[in-house]
Length: 87
Image 1 (cartoon, helix red, strand yellow):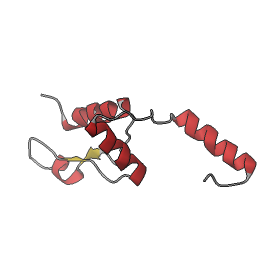
Image 2 (image 1 turned 45 degrees about the horizontal axis):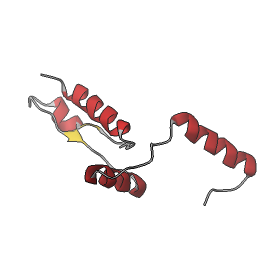
Image 3 (image 1 turned 135 degrees about the vertical axis):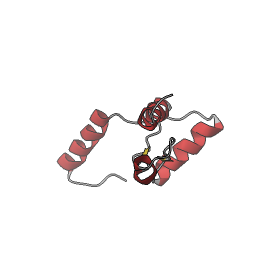
């Protein structure tokens, strides 16, 4: 049987594979520290865009791939160079 941490990692990778990142995905610290054999998994909070992407994936709709860390950093650098906020 896999550990809760392994299941969370597997879920994180599966979600990322369909373009969804849940930033707060983790093992619940209270149930994870107890004697229960199965700790709870916290899906956590996410922004509206992520919630929309998750709903689309669950409905079987196509979604754009999530930007990579490098792509996000490049966007931030571009905005900083231009001195404006994106719309």
